Length: 171
Length: 78
Image (cartoon, rainbow over all chains, first blue to last red; front, side):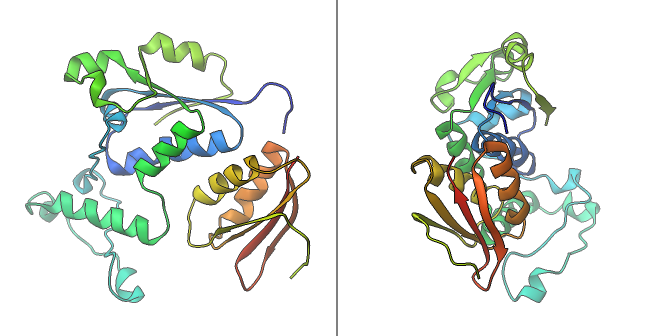
């Protein structure tokens, strides 16, 4: 606890998959709730998390440790960890979208907020969000694609904020 | 269960990390200094998280206990 200068958290969000979208928004919203100043730099695939509609999927084939659970049925059935080998996961059409919808459903069942809800809380609590201008240019994103209230900038914009931070993490 | 007067109650049952902390912060923001918030959660993580949140923000955690209702917190706004 300090009554002087607030603590400052600076995050870099570089990934755009559903599982990797959670850490920056959970940390940013919680830090803001703890009266910290928070800034997040969204770069590379992380920039897609600023799109008005987030279309983040999980990619089970690149996460061999990811537990595969069913979000329905009796608790005993839901607790089963299904051993789906990568050779199958990589080749079943629609496996990624199925895994994504299962993960969303499991998270909702467990009372975890959606990415959109967490992002909205971040906006409400004054989290500073900086979208990477260079990534926009490279991938052809438009400022109109993004939610309101964000800034656009580059590495220097983020570093200027991060230079005075107490915690800085790359996600 | 401890008895104590409170000014506002917040139900966070069924919510998972980080929602209980964020909802608690938002509720405290609407209250006056010295008022007491009663918060009930079912997330076992909230036991330590609300304590950490209170020590960081300076609000006083008067009670932090597990009851039949769930995890119950009484927080006095600084």
